[in-house]
Length: 434
Image 1 (cartoon, rainbow, N blue to C red):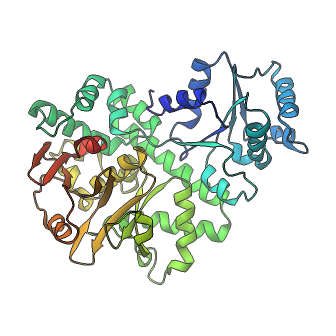
Image 2 (cartoon, rainbow, N blue to C red):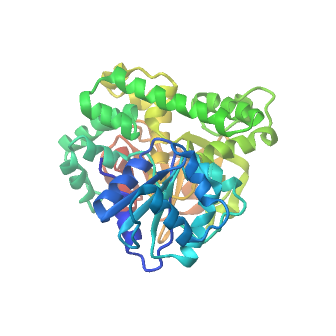
Image 3 (cartoon, rainbow, N blue to C red):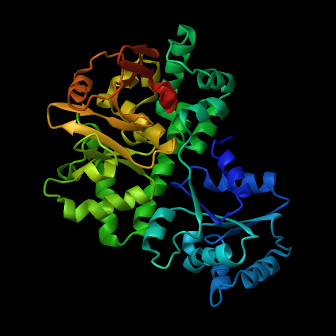
């Protein structure tokens, strides 16, 4: 399946100061498939090494980590020569071999002529615990679940995607296309962006089969908790994971440790939250006290929201039935509108938003996301349906005087005075209308 990040891989290949590349992302978002396709299509040869499938490979990285020695050994193992500039070397599941991870430093410093890429499950967790990992000696790319636009490509709607991408002014979209996009968005909510699930939908549109694949993916994450975390930490991670539906069913969506269990305290669970975040399974949005740059300087003490990294898996986690897709627009308001907010968080993160932030006045007003533009900070309010309410936006406007107020929901694209309404399916393009 086509992925937008492929263009970034080609850009990396052409960098004059190219370093070994680490591709990060949650399990089963398509890291291995993407890098294999990249190696086969863009290089004369491709050398693949999987440290989980072949544990003996780790022995090649014991002792000296000199690149020439490693390349000679790997060439002998493959039975063919690894040629500088012409062979892409792919270290998969590299977290299973810490010395191989550390060797990337020496490929950067002493052998930049070799094109090296690496990926692995829970690589974010592994990097956090690898104290000797050389900062600044690798390039990073992050891959997320397929976006709504990538989903359109996958289901044969690339012309519709191009039509949406060509919109440059906030004028209403032709109603026939607006309605089609809303209908497809309903399906995307349920399917999500995991490549295996999207492929299953393209294959036969069997909703029960889609849910089976989603449940298998969720089960693999649970196995990771016990396999890759200490027992006491795994118990906390599982408790947080089980609490996610309750967290997102709240009106405010603010993460509450008491929803894990009544006596839960932040100091006991915050490391487990970070573990799930580094594993790529949740997106965190942090509360800011004021609308100033940099946001990180104004984050509240421990106040944050946690969204599941894939809306389709969230539907599976809460056992939302497929029938909801044909039941009008009910899917947009079900689960207290959580799917809309989760979807926006997912799209913003896939669009290179390194961090997410929100603003809130307790029990008075809340702005779900703050976007940093070239000429200021813009508040984005998320509506799950056709609501035109804007009390929170007006409250924010009175305090911070932004140049434009942003709202997303099912209403058509339109700029009405100081308010820009961007439909949910077009949220990845909202920066173009600011």
